[in-house]
Length: 175
Image 1 (cartoon, rainbow, N blue to C red):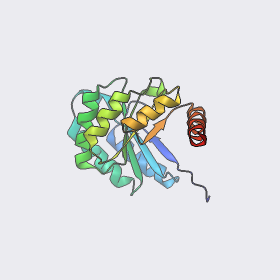
Image 2 (image 1 turned 135 degrees about the horizontal axis):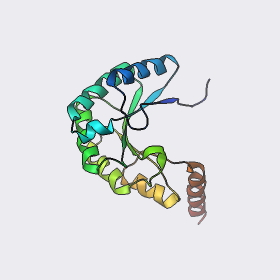
Image 3 (image 1 turned 90 degrees about the vertical axis):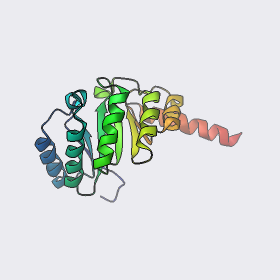
């Protein structure tokens, strides 16, 4: 209490294949347990089938049930093309006021694709934030992702990368 800690509930991870009603129920339950935000996986199979309208309607209800809490839409970019992610994102953004879109490989096993981040950033046209989650090994990669439009970069070694970035910033300010 009193700390700037946000509890973000992960719903339907990793592939988003739960029925919509299960996702709604999970959001309601997590909200009761104190969730401050939600990360909800999109059904990879529904995206593959082109069911963009039904996915968008699903997220409209999820945002409603989230009761003004931030909702991030997560796509498994190891199974979906950038075109599928972009197209589905546009449908979702027409229906729901989501907080962010996050392409992420299952369990963060894949390197975050800078080109994909840039494509999503350009396609959302400022309507939401863009996040990237996956493998990042160096500060320069993180800086590249941020330059491509990522608002947030999540990786297992984020502490190491933050130290490296701070070190670079401090050495530049001393010169």
